[in-house]
Amino acid sequence: MLAKSYLFTPGDNDKKMLKAKNSGADAVILCLEDAVAESNKKTAREKVRQFLQAHQQRCGVQLWVRVNSLSSPHTLNDLVAVMPGRPFGVFLPKPSDADDFKTVDHYLTALEVQNNLAVGSTQIMSVAESSVGTINQNTFTSASSRLSGFTWGAEDLPADIGATTNRDQDDVHFLIHRMNRANCLLVASAGNMQAIDGICSDYKSQKKLRAECERARMEGFTGKLAIHPDQVEIINQCFTPSTDEVTYARRVVDAFANANGAGTVGLDGRMLDLPHLKQAQRVLRQSGSATT
Image 1 (cartoon, one colour):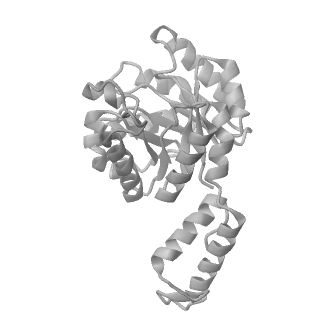
Image 2 (cartoon, one colour):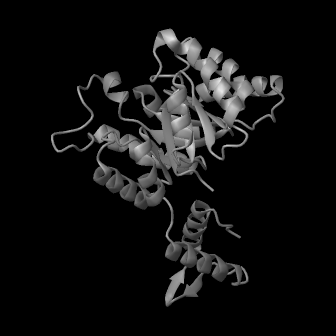
Image 3 (tube, one colour):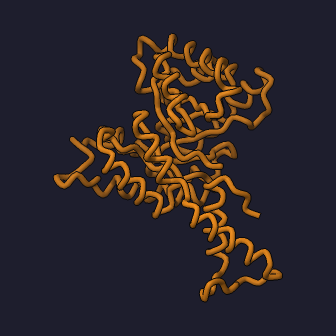
């Protein structure tokens, strides 16, 4: 089943990491990057490794690590420190081009061998949040077979382009961020990755969060980033298909399975073709049901 909620938490705070693990989030991203001060990077690496070793095997939650970007001096040190903890995946911030993913892929392969892990078992998730990375998004789709999730960010990009904010007077993201968000969907689809919607920065507004989640799901996103544990429940609710949706999706899949290879089938007075089948299979994957 695809993870619906991805909760960020600082990697240098034991209490917050434990709270995040117990929040109900499908995935927790232990952050070594922006949430950790430069002077505390080494301590955070050790805390994250210890947390992974204590919880990864039995917590039932995907535990990811957001490492520092390759433009920093920290990335390899981050990976060397945390890989003994067997993270589910690595969140790579601020990628510039496909070569960044290839570099991290090579690092992970070597560290998997060193730590007796199956080669290729550590996934990569990433985000378009810099001007050069946003321009080069189309190169990400085939950069690494590990790349399984893609999201977008409107927090770092304004600083990159010299903007003073990322929203207009009506609290709507400027066009450049809406374009980045739309491209995230296309890149994820083209690369067979999960499309994950960006954060709702107003973490106290449940109404705003729910509206963002409902729109994101209609558009094609299958999960959303969270920056506070209180956001998790709404995200999980909004990205979980209803019983009626699952029942109908199962009927669509069954109709095609019984159609003797036909490309179109009739159901409830409607003619359905292969895009409808693909849509139904996605609903079943989101719900955790088998699709065949």
